[in-house]
Amino acid sequence: MSKKELLHTQKMPKHVAIIMDGNGRWAKQKGRLRVFGHENGTKSVREITETCVELNIENLTLYAFSTENWKRPKIEVQTLMRLLISSLKNEIKTLQDNDIRLQTIGNTDELPRKVQRELQDVISQTKGNKKMTLTLALSYGSRDEIINTIKQISIKVKNNIISPELIDESVINEHLYTRNLPDVDLLIRTSGEQRISNFLLWQIAYAELFFTEVLWPDFTKEDLYEAILSYQKRERRFGKTSEQLKA
Image (cartoon, rainbow, N blue to C red; front, side):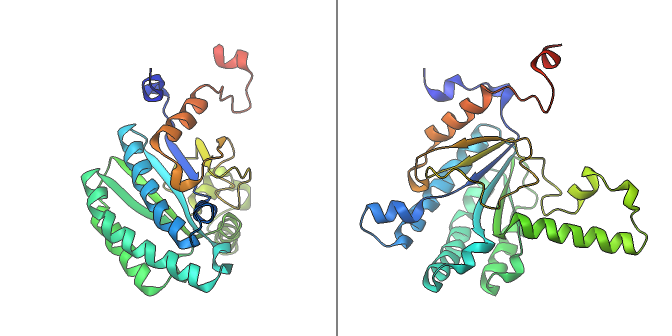
């Protein structure tokens, strides 16, 4: 029986987030420049996105470019921006054919104007799609997101729009970049690294974590099936006991 056949269709995660790591190492193993890894990584993005649609996963969030990635060599950053533009142009048909809505989170004002224009064009063209929401985290850092959230709420408290006593999780959620998304159910990181790297720190409070040695350009739908199978075997208690869940 294949891994896909072992999946429980009624236990699919509603929100999968992926830290797509290992493009540079994949290229280095092949004696190529890092850009070669990034270029091949876009193929995995397409395959995993289409597979999530097939599995009826409602939300997929990809860590595409972090706030820390701006510190990389200028030529690599320029290459990543170029790849982002070309990918958006090349994949608009894939998004439309699969009824996928694109959105972004992060400080996208920091992106080059050309990238911003292309993003807005694709977001506009796909805003009516309903099968799945694909979210690209671009110029994103979770600490920045939380700081921004605190500032927004503080201003509203100062202006008597929000009472401090009424601040709870729902108020914070409403001011995050991800206000329209559910919490993450399954977080996957490729390449063998076992850290979160400032990604969706608030939203993964009760997420199941899956780390794999597979480098991102080699990550296929079979690897995604394995991650989901692992997720489905876990007992999600959310602070309760096993006995409470059974009751």
